[in-house]
Length: 191
Image (tube, rainbow, N blue to C red; front, top):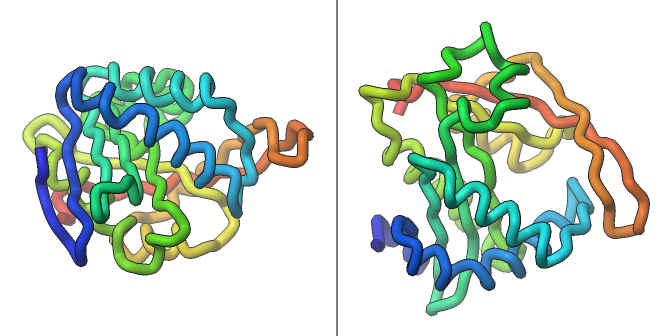
């Protein structure tokens, strides 16, 4: 179901198994492309990207959005309740009310569609769709390097939680390396 249009981008909420299945192949290709670029340089096989998509989109209360321009995928965004992400929930216990917190699990915009505000739109639309009677907070994880993504979230009212996580993944150069991710949070009532 289309939820918004902005500067030629149609924002579509995927909520049925058929809609998810229809978008899956495009998501896989976009996921591999986006995360192979700076700052992560991560290598994902099609099966790994598909596994990530299936896991997140089968999570109860997920909010999955895709952005299309001229019928082609331009970006994606997925949010899930934090309590469904056991490792992250354990790390953030005592810092946010885990049962009442959403996790912005994925955000990706293909390079040719960046710097048009699409990332902000995808964040805003996910925040807008969260039930504020059940959820009061939202968290996300971003590269600890201060880049455009970090600045976008800061400009949108997200605060540095002072919590970091080392993430070890295969990189496009064939090596397995660690990089540091930083958690940001905000209250939903700030929308």
